Length: 373
Image (cartoon, rainbow, N blue to C red; front, side, top):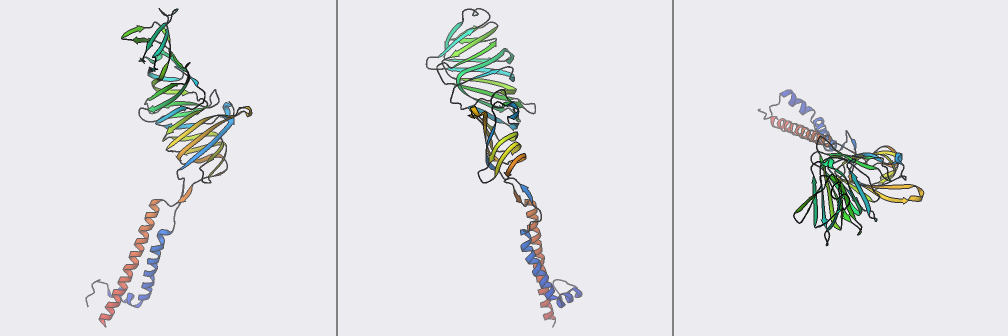
């Protein structure tokens, strides 16, 4: 009799004699195929993103105890939140720039401009009233400094292309300084915005090659000139540069966009609010690549106790303490890699298919035996 499956007689006879063994093997393959994907053959540790908050403390104005570290980002800003108006002095010794500009807008009564130079206005200063003052410095070495008093300010730095490396280094004041440098041969663009807080607020800059305009008339200042601007509503100082050093003032909040962060010499506490975290002692901590990372230079909480404080807020960070964690509970978890899981499903499916195939063959062999009889 013709057999559709085309099995040789010896195989057919074997299946006929040991049909229940074949059924048992087939059933075992089906069961193993169903269970096998649930068995974890290989696992690895991973750190899920979480929102972390940290309180870092160190002796007041102790440079060796200040936090340090490296941050790579495409954008960061420094927002001044000190309740007292401050003085911000930026000098050409702190920047490495190619061009610069100063733009200042007047208040209701207009800008009050007072200028002195090394020529006609060396003894008797020049006084002008204008609605706006804009000066572009194509040769940035001609600009010595820009100083703003009795103001609030915010600083924004953005990479023209590529990334910036921002280093936290020991500073001369209460907090570490920020040193930013463009990477990959690309530059960065920095803008400082000044907002007056009192009637005494002013912006002073010292430069060569200054030309002041008023009602269509230009006044060229000779040599090195000092220009004092009062009664302003908002002022801007911009630089196209490859590097800058910023002094961190008390109350400043520094925010970094999608950075890569590793900080050193951390002392204090770090927590994700879900039972993970702990005490840091001279710790080195990687924050991965959070969505945003913020450092807040908190006003000294206990000046008489010689203590300074920095708060950190890391959104979507993958925190890993490399060293210096005391009773630190990490939030890493054990997972099965997706490729291993997919292979498990494939193997389970193959076992189930083979089990079904054997069952079908054994059943067909039994039918054939009945037909032969």
